[in-house]
Length: 83
Image 1 (cartoon, rainbow, N blue to C red):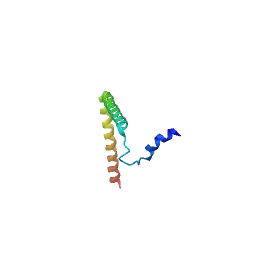
Image 2: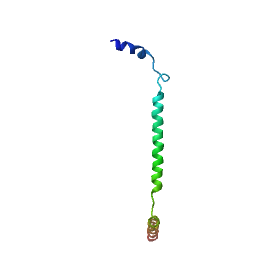
Image 3: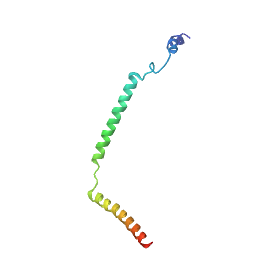
């Protein structure tokens, strides 16, 4: 019972927005999370910079998309002519 009597004054304090704060530990945790995110973004940027796309594959991909759109336009134009 003696152990509980020393905690009684702490329990009697009224808790509100001004008495409950994150404190130093909250700041340290938030700062560590911020530094961790920054390091992850820096690493991701470095890894994405190392990716190389062959130019012939990139050039071959662009006309394929354009020809699909052109085929769609041709089909729509042909359908409107026949009606």
